[in-house]
Length: 127
Image (tube, rainbow, N blue to C red; front, side):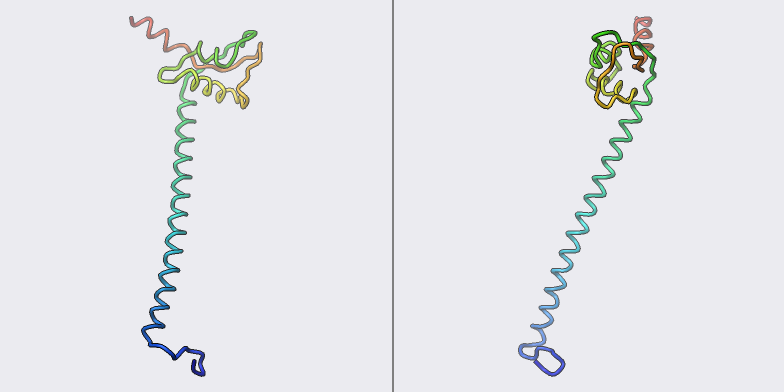
């Protein structure tokens, strides 16, 4: 080592190869971090897209109000008010969403919004 603190033993090539190795290591770390951040951003965009699509389809369904009968469940309401293209489970989710039912329970005597029955009557009239 000389007076300026530079290692003089070994060739100039040896010290520059160490610098390149350090730079390569730093570049690899930066690339991994960049890839991770990109993956997080893309995942977040996918989640937002799915949530936005789900909410849009729920709000576009015409609705009507009905009284909940004694012993009637959310599942029974969904089965009694089918929506074309949705399973009973998805229709139950729709009714819960339309009424802000976080726990999915309905109380007898309450009034809830359900998918309108207009489409099923139209289908019968066309037959």
